Image (cartoon, rainbow, N blue to C red; front, side, top):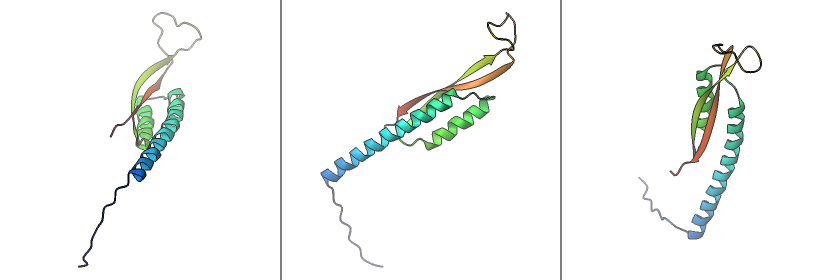
Length: 105
């Protein structure tokens, strides 16, 4: 067994620089996530499960933020214009509305 001696050094300047670097990383990730969220919100999914898979895939890449989402149903009818009373939709699409929150941890 080798005897070891460890010295812990604290530098205020290094700490401040690391804080600036972390803030820069957080802002950069927020900009990138806003772009990806915008494209996800425009996308229409044929089933709710596909939408949840896409959101979970995006959530795995999030490091400094938290992603909250809501699912909305979008109906498409056979004809253009206002649908007749009692008409059933031809296709139902699912769309997400996402909110990006900064994680304090």
